[in-house]
Every structure is written in C-alpha cells, then in structure tokens.
Image (tube, rainbow, N blue to C red; front, side, top):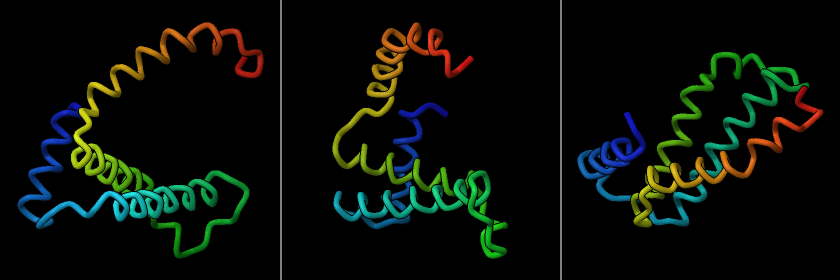
Length: 108
C-alpha cells in the first residue's frame, strides 16, 4: 500500500469508526504519546536501560504503526498529500545527502 492509499484508508476508518478526527492539537499530543512509547521500547530493548518485565511483550511494530496512523490523520486533516511530500523529501535527501553520507568516515 502506498502512502496515498494509506491516507484514504485512515480517512475511511475515521468516517466509519472514529466519528470524526480529533483536533490538530489533540492529535499532536497523541503523536507525542505514541512516539514516547516507541522511545521506551527502543531505550529498554536496544539501549542501556534494562527492560522491565511488563515491557517485554510490547510490539515495536505495533507502536510504530500507531505513530504512522496519527501522522496520516494529521496529514488528512490539514490537507497534506503525504505521498507527494514524502516523494519530494526523498528526492531532496537523495540529491543533498548522497555524497555526504558516502564521504562520512564515521559510517565506514
């Protein structure tokens, strides 16, 4: 599924199950909360913090999908074509960063 279709699926879900979009500020808070859950898993599973027993069954993929869902909601409600924005950003990063990363001695 491409990003455009994902946006359409989220919009359909909101209309069928969610009643309406939360306002932009609520979704920003929601995004922050979901990113925090991702950070908690990463810090404890891959970082130096020990993983609590209650966190061992947390699904990183599910948490990343929560982040993606909220981002798609925010794009929909603010009129952003995220596929177009992503393609533009990827093109920019490709042109700007290709040599920079290949020449970075820290990445060798």
